[in-house]
Length: 390
Ligand code: PLP
Image (cartoon, rainbow, N blue to C red; front, side, top):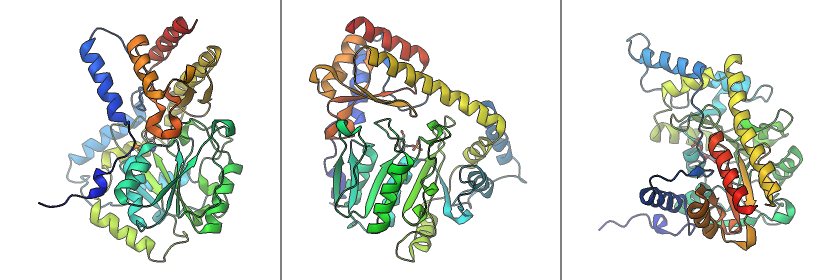
């Protein structure tokens, strides 16, 4: 019998999203009439905005005519989208065309990028963190350490004394909902420059940041020597079901000189490019009209987050995040373990929140709340909680 990749059989975290889904599914089967208030999903609830839909509809028509048909070929993304990305997302940041790689989702991008490095490269992850990073590292087989994020420090990571080759930073953070400012990020860039490390900078929640915050790690001098930045259209234009993302792999990283050539070949050999229709939709998100509608949607989610935060604080919950992010990180009451609290909320108040243990051991006294759901669910959940905690 062929031996399968034994890394796939290694145990990740004790609880995973699939356990949550299983529990919710069983509840729904048992009580089909009961309304559940979903504060758990990391999925968006608002539909795709009209200018993006219009561009996608036109793209579908392009595929139906011999003159405009598109097939294989644009492995790194179409020029029209890369131009829009450079002109809008990286204006004045000196990002060049061949540094932009359009793809089909930051989840797979932040996982696939590990193929660029030796599996002997040491990795530093925050605890708690987005669990995809950990699971990808287990599959890849890299040695990994965790940096404990502490409530008393506001969950801000402290620079380690030890050298690590690869550091994953998610900013704004999922699950914590907090944001590192420019000064904090500068410390990490300096650490990476000093230790010749590479920062995997997961910036998928950038659309939730106010204007005055840092929107790209490349705003920090010399970050283009040490950081690979990832962004996604999933939350920005409701593309969770469409799939389009991109990342910046600078030409200037402190790595073996061959890295760009090797990576480009890796793409050619394993990826046939992102969907044409999705890329036309993403391009259409950069018009003035689309930007206004996107801001409106982002504000809807942020208003959810602000409302949740205000009401939870009134009920004496300890709440983190939820300012410039669609996530809130909430301490359970009475020292409840997160899985037990999840079960309690589901069965007694019919509210879904995500148990913090899914994001790492340090999350076990916390719940992650998502503000990406619809307003009715958010208000309904708060009403239930208020009734119970009055
Ligand atoms: N990175 C983080 C931190 C996320 O929370 C998510 C989705 O929830 C992703 C990446 C995945 O994004 P995409 O939909 O582009 O795969």
